Length: 122
Image 1 (tube, one colour):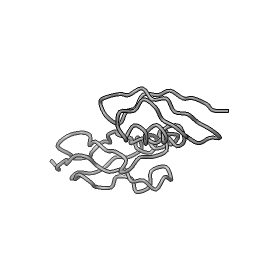
Image 2 (tube, helix red, strand yellow):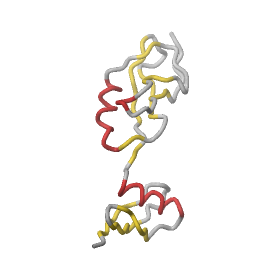
Image 3 (spheres, rainbow, N blue to C red):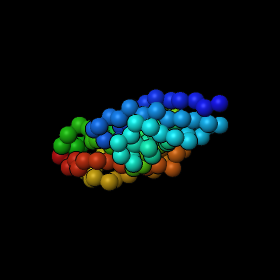
């Protein structure tokens, strides 16, 4: 028996309303998308949802108090809280540069947490 899941695509500003047909745990059809990205997103979101995580961490001796960070790649949605827990435990020392690895393996995902801003030392 087919299952229908409805969701809003977040791949572009259009926000298409998607209807994804599932059979035996597999996405077999996507309707409502206006571009190919919507079909890819719809299938992935109902079978293996992932996200990019963004946050910030404190900087010691920096020209500003915090540096923005993000996951270098998308991570399983279920790991968001584990990754945020690790990010909250980190403090870095200035200088920090865009692309610096802040955490090498976030919550056992194999994904790096990287700096997204330069922070010079004061």
